[in-house]
Length: 154
Image (cartoon, rainbow, N blue to C red; front, side, top):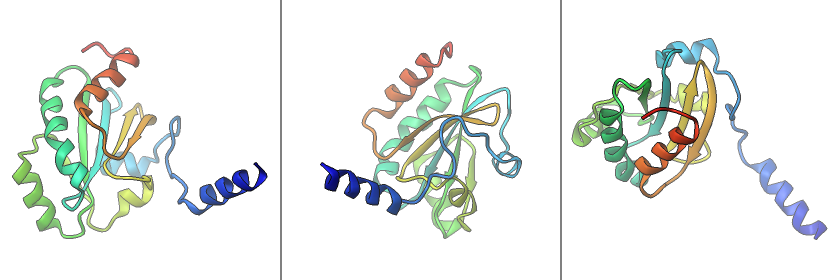
């Protein structure tokens, strides 16, 4: 039992620390870079062209963005592709309609340090209120459920 606990502790210590966790306030610099509106709940979606799960989820997120316009919920993408042209082509290929910040220098992803991709951060009034990492089946249903549990009127 002690060995298992020690191994788990070693694993946790070897993982990069999340820069932002639920309940944390974003720095003013990050809020400015993302051009966040305090009056809206913004779901930030970190993605990249090379991320297979991102490729599968983004069309659903894009559709949900369209459906939720005017509800006080919006989306902001952060494309972490190091080659901006690759990222822009990927965004165009998927027909993304929500605003995207290109992060080729990896500055924003370094601030957030997600442990998996895609990564969703729900932000309201400058605070992280929920985080989701990795591939999630039926992501639009999951996001809608999250919003309902938060008391958002859809």
